[in-house]
Length: 327
Length: 209
Image 1 (cartoon, each protein chain N blue to C red):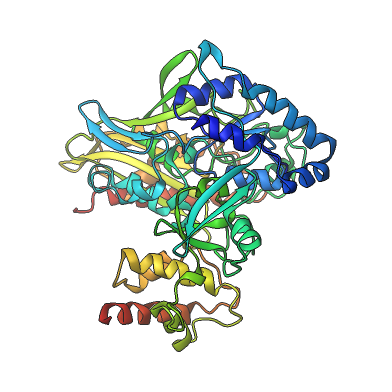
Image 2: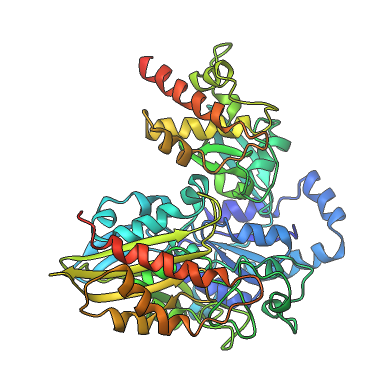
């Protein structure tokens, strides 16, 4: 690994001041479980690593009248184990518990999970000069693309690998972003950006910004959430397709529905037409199949990943029907 | 505090000097550039913490306090194996996929191959070497022997550390909980059935004890 220097800020202000000053030559490290692998592979070669773990107060889960605040440095393990999260946002707890392994959940953080880089094997190979690394082509377009995008690809066919991201988008989460200019809040759905906007990045963070906190609106009475993750192995795998859903079932009808997919697009992929078709109707397998039709027509599978279209139907059906199951 | 760190980073040890020579021109140029940034302040006059090329860390490993100089790129695994000669944790995949390097940090199972050694400062580390008391094996080690919980044995230290962490949190795990608890460890001999039996046996031993 190329050598680098290390700095331990005590405040967010110090971290972002370093980030601004290093002018693209520094990276932030939260848990480091993703970043360190990129550095070992030579995909990322910073001159300076800014330690976020040295800043106190960023690892907590707190509920107040505005919602639930999850500090960016909260570990995935503590999110998965949190009793209030389990009760109010079962889908988020399930998503956290489904990702990686105990060893990675103990170290990996919520902020790091939301800012992780794609798993595309061409991106992860330092020898492959793909668009994401400044090159002129996407090798997945005509190469091996079993795990790649069926929606939203275009010039780069990565899928966004986070399990927390689709679930948090389905829960209408916001991120609080700090920079030398102050703080701004952004819906998580607008935090992610398609390759067509900036192929080098998966989100809209400026070079001197960091994610400080995730905020989820208070759970409405009767609203439930679920996360179904389909993968090749039973455990320790990224999603081939995942479905993050939220909704309220009362008197047989579904309201307040959100359906967001993971593993199928460069960003968490919201199925707006499906949501509209489900509104107020009684959930059934046949209804979900019908409701998905319009959104699935927009799928553009590559040579090896057409199977994902069928997995979408399976994942969304299972996730939505689980909302009707008695608690 | 800042003064001590600055002082340490400026001290030229024989090791750092030799490494500096080995690092060549690129390394020297980097060091100069970053050192130049140390003294300054950021925008709005915020005092910046120093950028360290090396840090002296002090932590507890298997009950003993140790102090070592590390570079930021060194992993805890490398420091344990190469500087402290604790070779129980294995460098196998070296990218957080196999679990051969699992150690406990403050009681939690962690891949030491993805853990920057600089972050071990002030922490309590337990490796497989720290489990036995003299000649008496830890109940988890004993159970792995009795139930043939290994074949070639290379992954075993990692599995044992994950088991110790699992039983610390869940003293009587179900088979599903055992599988989930050990899901971050791979055994290429495919000895999972026996490993699961060993974990169940260890759980029984520890509850009786």
